[in-house]
Image (cartoon, rainbow, N blue to C red; front, side, top):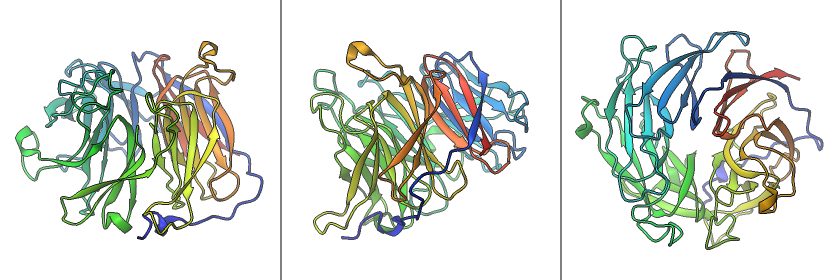
Length: 419
């Protein structure tokens, strides 16, 4: 059986010693968040400059891009207190076809409530995007909605909303959250008419086989995934892929790697997960679930007994509670760097002997294959990272980094200064 990643496993030549990373200059644009749950980049006001959207505990806010590094990122409220707390995740999608993004928001975040349905809504701008937006309900029968993303899952050219709950209905702490129903991973396609009506949205279950997920990302297309994109998920089971097979509405879930199963009765597997964007087929995870390892998977030798062959590489174990992963080509050499967000400081009472604090870390591949990486700590203690992302915010061709903090309640931009 052909490997899902065979078509993209291109090995780049690289010197033995990695070049120095670009220099970065930090700018803190907000220190007043209750909890910075999530951050995304999208052009809210249609001025061709990427803005920032941040999910706060009871609010959703956006910051207008001033167009210069030294300008003020003016903050506007999209929503304040109109959903069931906490708000937890967000994605941008043009629902009404006007060329400007609406926002999909996951709310009613109560991680240990596996009995009651959470809340999924979409937010429509009014005439003035700087005023509060209108809330429209989406179908949501799942408890503990945790992550939402938007991408083309079937090759139609139209993005779908994909949301992944944290835990399955009826699971309990006594059963390590695996004694209830599995997590239902659901996709919603924008209806042709009247998206304001909840009943016009139809939910499609992509998977109901995993327990205790955490994050997911679009996987590669082609191979098993045909014309659309597969879905990569980090969960207690490990690293899994979900892809369409057979009839158009039939999706299959396959385990690619069991990840870290050192504590089978506790937190295990993987939590954060991200696929590199440079066609090397490199997958990064945090392991075990909410764990202390940064792990990279590279395409392995073909295995006739398995559709998947991944080599696992632990590249960092000096962290507590890794909570974000992203890939971006920071130095413009065509090979992605790995960005990791760490949420907590080391805790000697729990056995931590390292001194590295919460914050943002960058890893550069040093062998051209993805097995060896060089770590740079970009921010040591300045942000308790709940989420991070990367984009060129000022149009200079260099990728900048944006992070939001939980305990620190802040939003920071790390401007790429070049070398």
